[in-house]
Image (cartoon, rainbow, N blue to C red):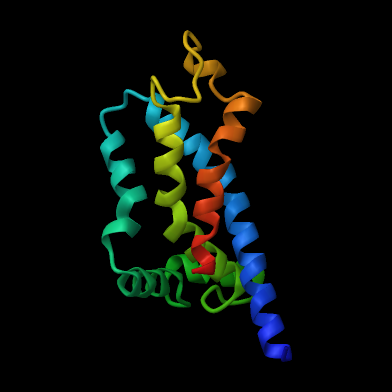
Length: 151
């Protein structure tokens, strides 16, 4: 194997592992909130989460480049804090990967939190739904969402 191939593979593996971890940390609470809230504006959050499903990847990538570029508020803030640019960095790659994979994690998690989901014992309220047993039943969804960066 060449050095470039090994470096590329390790970058992809690091990106997939970090994306999976971030999706677990962000996706589980977001899915639980989307399942349990009665807020009237919930549909807006659901639409933003599902946006990567309806936008072509090139359009999503272009929008992220514009949003994270050095002339954008987010790009200037990141460059001011860290001293480096967000696009074409590992942090930028990770942010884009998480945003692209978010619906592939949140939607299966939300389906698992829904009343009557197979992993939910009868009579258990929303406050106790996230038990270790339930987390293990949701693991395949998180792993599938984390596989997105690998192709």
